Every structure is written in C-alpha cells, then in structure tokens.
Length: 427
Ligand code: NAD
Image (tube, rainbow, N blue to C red; front, side):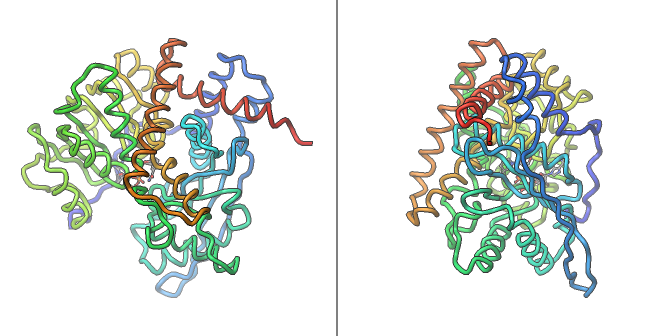
C-alpha cells in the first residue's frame, strides 16, 4: 500500500497560536468599522468551552484516556454549528479558532447559526472501526450536555465522516429515548442525511472558482487547477471542477502529490486513491511534493488539506491567479499580504468552503420537518446562496477597497454586531 510510505509532512510554516491570529483579525476589522468595544470583546472570546478527558477500551483490552473539546464561539444569530475533528495535532486553541471561523462563515452566507467546533486528539488512521465507534459514542455522551438540535449541531470535519455522525446521532437518540435527526448533520442518507451533503463543500469551492473566473475574465473551461488534499473537500472540488471542463494538473494528499501538465483523469485518480490510500503512484503522472504542488503554474489553486499551508516562506512562490480556500485557515496572515501584493485573487475560507455548512443547514431543516428534498433542489439552493454571498462580499470589497478576506470579515462582523445589538445583553 502506498499509504505505508506515508511520512510526516515537512512543517514549512512557523507554529503560532491560530486563535490569537483570528482574534487579531477580528480586532483589526472591528477597529476599521468602529464596532463597539463590548461587541468586539464578545467576538474575540468564545462563549462556552468544554474539555472532556474520557476512557476508551482499546481492542487489546487496555483503557486509554482521550481528550476532547466542544467550543461554542458565538450563538447570537442562532444555534451553534460546526464540525468535529479527529486529529493528533488538534488542541483547545485550534478548536477555538475553528469555532470562531464557523461563526464568521455562517454570518457571511447568512445562515441562522452561530459557530462551534469539536475535536478529539487522536489518530483515527491508527484505530480500528470498533475503537473508533467506542471513542465516538463516549465522546458524544460526554458532550451531550451541550449539543442538541436547538442549541449546538455537530458535523464532519477532518478525520470524521458520515458513519461517525451516525454513531453520534444514535448515541444521543439512545440517551433521549427517541430518534433525534437534527442533533448532527453530515449523516448517511439512510438515516436522515441530505442528498448532496457529501460533496457540498467541494461544490461550493467549484462555484466560487467559477464566479471568480467570471469576475477576472478568465475562461473557466480549460482553466488549469491544482488541489492540495484529496479528502472529502479536495476530491469533490477536483471532480466537480473537472466535470465543469477545468484541467486538473496536480493533486496531493498527506503522502505526496501527482502532476501531469496535460491534465489528470480525476475520476480514475479518485478510485485509485480510495483503493490505495493515496494518489501517489497513479498512472501517467509524475510524483511531486506538496510544496511543489502549491507552487504549480496554474489558474486555480485549491488548498483543501489543513491550516497553515501557505505561509511567509512559500507565499511568494504561488503562481496561481486564484486561490480558493477549501481548507480552514490554509493561509497565514503574512502570506495573505504577500498574495495580495502579488495580485492574487483569494477567496477566503469563510466564503469558499461554506458549501458544507449550507447543505448541513438544509439537512437540519429537512430533518426537523421530516421532509426531504431532491439533489437538484439541494444543489440549486446551494448555488443561490453561494452566488449571493460571493457578490455581497465582492461588493463590500469594491466599495471599501479591501481584499475579499477583509470584505468577508466586514460583512460577517456587521451582521453579528447587528444581532448582538438588537438582542441586547442579558440580564
Ligand atoms: P479529510 O480528512 O477528508 O481530508 C484531508 C485531506 O488532506 C486528505 O487527503 C489528507 O491526506 C490531506 N492532508 C492532510 N495533511 C496534509 C498535508 N500536510 N499536505 C497535503 N495533504 C494533506 O478532511 P476534509 O473534510 O476534506 O477537510 C479538509 C479541510 O477542509 C479542513 O481544513 C477542514 O476543516 C475543511 N472543511 C471541511 C468541511 C467538510 O465538509 N468536510 C467543510 C468546511 C471546511
């Protein structure tokens, strides 16, 4: 198996506190918009943080203690919403940053949600299905004091998937005594999942890329694409971009990357990677490193792996004209400035990868009503919301003469400040 050749990724970017970076950005935008200091303080802090240390019986009979988190950043615009990550490097500050981005993301695309994130520090790739199920059910029980369909609704993120969402839904339902579809989204279709959810984040990236190409006057048909990360988001983005006529020339995952200047057969690469555990070794391609993939000469770059992939040390080498941030936080603030100075058009994560939470919202609505929509209906509603959000962000960017990231933050913070002001402060 190619996956056995897996190496730890070379850390190209300096390690800093991601939550402090989000806080700084929120402060900068609040100052620029003259947002009340109290509201700024609300937005730079998380509302609720739960840490759980819990035991899991491993297959060899031993007990292991795992640490998990559920952070609700802000609920001024509605229930908290955000994925659950299983990853060895996840900690409280990363979870806080991811929760804050969820608040901003839901506000940018105008969903009636606040933001949250959950995580368990673990390596799911090194665990059996039975161990993962026991870990998930125990973690779900531990955080069941804060989650629920009216208050905080988890979804998949890195290292989690529809099966894990099914176990969370089942565990919560067993404890309640009845089936609660709306407690989690990203579920399998058979138990109340939404059509189109699996590929929704990648579809949102594709829609953003198409809108950005239109805006820049670049032909979408035949546009060259490089995608970093070939998991849920990256694989869906690559497949949909290829179906739209773009030429995907490079793909990578944690094991490395593949390249063919004439274009890759993305569907076959997808099947290959699902059978072998990686894209590396796929026919008619040249092996490249993740660093080389990011620097490929192409029209569209989709970083869809993890945070902090484009940083001060490699930002100047990015050649793509458009960067569509499929991952959360793939670009550091320093790198963002370099990209901007070099005339790159960056669609920020809180807009580019919002397709997932939009269709999660549809799934939640369908579950609450027990009335399910066709895939066409889901996709056309997703298209409308992404289209509106893109144009609203673009309008702020042009009016305020700021880049798309700052414009998205301004749109979101304005909506959040209004909600906080109208609701007032209890008591
Ligand atoms: P995933 O676990 O399905 O896939 C992650 C992919 O990234 C895998 O192909 C993995 O091999 C690759 N990868 C990991 N480390 C890498 C590295 N150092 N270099 C290159 N590739 C690497 O996760 P996902 O759900 O696709 O999430 C990817 C990103 O998108 C994350 O930042 C996540 O927070 C964000 N996101 C996910 C969703 C969603 O609906 N799943 C929604 C919004 C944002």
